[in-house]
Length: 215
Figure (tube, helix red, strand yellow):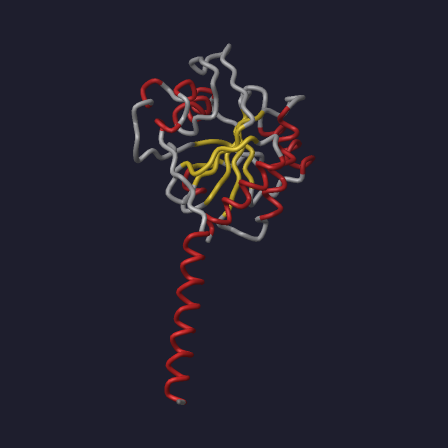
């Protein structure tokens, strides 16, 4: 009788463990990997629209609010969120910055998670202006780089790497892009999510998705 009881107990424990493990597998969130074909064609440069696998964001070379050169090496093996903004924007940018601050605060102690903002008016947003903006908003320099650089380079990143904008142009003096999108990049430089940076519910979603990647 005692042997039969032990056998049943072991069987019950195994059954419970199997059920819990199966439930965890079912409930575990899997984030998609985005390639150019997964976006609306108008968001993607014509040269990339038919690519359906292995898209990774391009290397970049920018200057941050402290005058430091920031490159892809600084984000190597990091999970990071990208947005495009400009400091004199009176409409969506202040909302986006405040929401990016929420992400900064949520992951302030997680060195694996970083943020990257690129100015779409780099000819205006010089280092001095970016520094004042960063200090006013409460940007943590070790977590979040607010950057300027070559307009052509920034606009090419927006159109060919992050697929963040609809507007067309060649990065010249009359070219201008503006987008509310936050783009989530994983440690392999893949796009894992696109979010409306002005929507509080979307900020909750991106925070949850970052945690999925971090785990």
